[in-house]
Image (cartoon, rainbow, N blue to C red; front, side, top):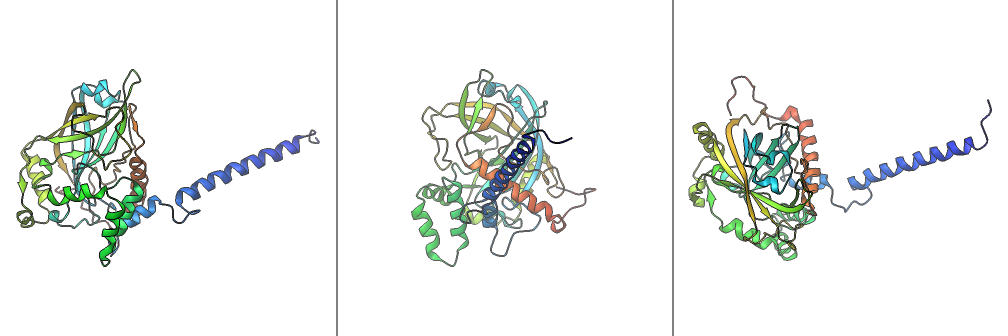
Length: 353
């Protein structure tokens, strides 16, 4: 049967629209990958910038490579439900998989040589929703933007250039506050004694649809005990893992979750700026660490602590870092899983944490 008048033209238009749509998708991927603008910051560039001069430790996370896994619970008291309808803020107990870690690309780094310590969490609610978070013990982030973070990585890599860091600090005055903290804040002898802070801002939405910009912190039940630098360096290279393992074996370790609510007008896009200490605080519940798990082949091994994995009731703010971290974490995850044969696996049977 011959085509009806106009059917060929219609088919041609449809094919043209499909071709345009495919081209747009291809261009979007090309732009995201940085192919059309070589100078644009991409997740791969950030991950590449994390690698030490002799290359990355194959099979490991590209940052926070050294750490120890744990399981436990988040005991919600229900108070944060006024701020967020997230299922894990309803009163109850929710399973947690987490990881204490050090901000280093070297899984063999001596603990006393790494200034920043971290806490990563995955909290799961009965409805299957998840909340993943990655925090550090610093009270604010070193820089204001992902581009500035990449610039910091580049400056740090040029140890043979005495002007590299000096020029970076001059261009990024916000770094001075972090530098002062890093050189003067006391070190503790245990992951259990550290306070961990979200630094990035998120938006909580309650059941009435009201939004509130927040940050949060986990405050240790264990009393922080400052340790001088020279005394810290006399401890073994893996003293943090040894200490937390012994503590948890002796009994659960606890942190109180505090949600900090922003005032109207507080900036939410710059994690290098701390909010004033007088902001409203809500005690949301308690993180309880019940068991130390194997780091190799344990429950954290294939877990990506992507900060944009959020339950209904929590969403990202205008802070650009969570999206940048999510993209970089994905690149890191894909690389380390592809390098699995290089990872020093420990047999599951009879293995110790």
